[in-house]
Length: 171
Image 1 (cartoon, rainbow, N blue to C red):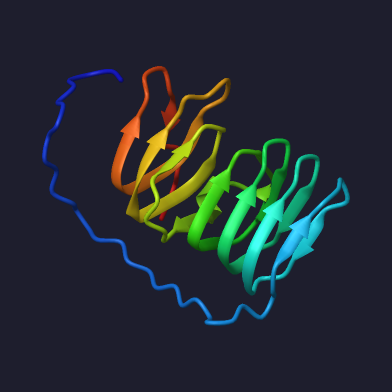
Image 2 (cartoon, rainbow, N blue to C red):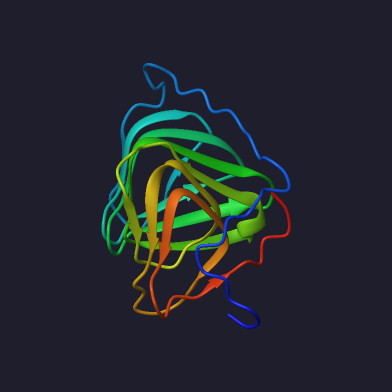
């Protein structure tokens, strides 16, 4: 951080960002598990528990996805085509231990919203517009890389040595 640092400052928002997500009582896409290097490609829809196992790839294309739970295990990969708006909303459980790669577009077109109440610790690099309106969020520690985008949470902690690059061009 360069310039003046004011800790625990109260900031008045310039504008309020709102968006609505409606989760279906019974996800039409069911539960899905990515198990190997051939990408599991999902269409925009409602899903139950989505798991990306080590060595596996989940491919998402532009559109709106709603998951009850998302588990990206260590060694798993989220491969994202964010050439236009890609919104991923997670209702109750979010685990991001694997990697993320864009095959089109970038973080300015990728919105990830977590609506659970369990505190999250993101310990692998993430590039997104990230929202956790009902949960505490900790960024770090990272072995390498950085966080990119905009991060919003009920409460947020950025650990020492963690870099957050706010390269987001629009919300």
